[in-house]
Image (cartoon, rainbow, N blue to C red; front, side, top):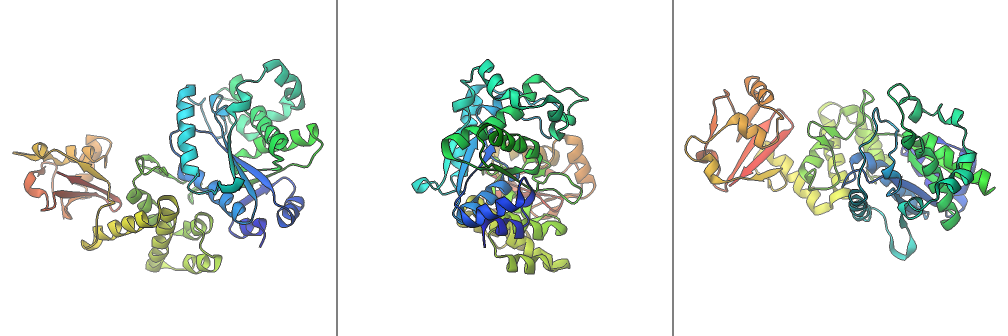
Length: 408
C-alpha cells in the first residue's frame, strides 16, 4: 500500500489540493513533505499527536519529513480557531519551547541518515526585509480573497490585527523557502490550516512554476464536535511532567464509545483488521478495546514499560492488587496530618481534584468522594496520619475518573 492508501484507509485525509496527482506522486516517488508546529507552549499536546502519527506513516512508506518549528510564526500568532489575539511571547520563551518540541518529536520520527530534518522558520523569517518581502511575496496575495478564509472571517467581528493578518503570508513563504532549499513539494496539516496551505501551494506554483501540493487531516473531536484533548485540568500533554502517564492512559481509557475505533485507527499502529475487530465490540466488551487503545497510545508516547505501569496502576484502583506507582502522586509532610489533620475539602484542593472549595463541598455532599475506597460521608471528614497505609500512601478518589495519591 502507498502512504496515500494507508492514510486514506485509516481515516486521516480530509482535503487535498490535487487528489489524483498526490496519489500518483506518493505511489511512484519519494517525496519530501513538511508539517509545521508553532511552539506556543513547552510541550506538544494530543492535538499535535494526530499529524505526528500521519508523519510517521509517511516516513514508514519511505517519504522524508521536514518538521518545521515555527520560531518566527509564533511571534505573530496564527488566528485560526482563536476568538482573541494570542498572547505575545518573548524570543526566549519561544526558543525554549522550540527546544522541547524538538526533543519530543525526536521520539516519534527517525532522524538518522537524513531520513528526516528539523528546521526553524526563525532562521529565514526574522531577518526579512519588510519592503522586499512585500514586493516579492505580498504582491501575490489578494486581500479580498484572504478575507474569505475561515481563519480570518471568524475574527472580523471581534477584530483582526494587521499583525495576525500577515500569518498566511508567512506560512506560505515557509513552504516556498522549504521548496527552494529542500525541494519540499507537499505540505500537510490539520483541516483548520486549509487556507494557509492553499496560500503556499499557489505561491510556489506562481513563483517557481513548479508543482506543489497540500493535504489536510481531520481534527480530533468529540461526538459534539469539541476538540479532544481537554480535561478539567486543561490540555492533555505529551510531557509526562505536565500530564502523568497514568492520567494520559486514563484519558484514552475513558474516551467515549463512539470514538474508540476512530482513535485506534488514527492514533495507533495496530493493523486495520484488528482496529475494526476492536471497534465492533459492544456494551461492556468495548472496555477491552479502550484498554488496548489506552495502552497502545501510552506505549507510543511514553514507552512500553511506562505504559505497563500505567495500565497496572489503573487496574489497582479497582482490584487493589496491582502496583500503583503511576498514579498521580503528591509528596506530603507528615506534620500536615498530625493531630486533627487536614479537612477533606483542603485535601481535594491540594490533590488538584477540584478547583474550589465550593466544588469540593458539592462533590462530597453528592457522595462522589472516597478515601482509600471508603465513601466520605460529610464535609467535616478529617484526614489524619492514621488514614495512611503502611507504605505511607493514601488514595483519594473523585467520581469515577479522578484519582490522586498522597505519600508521606
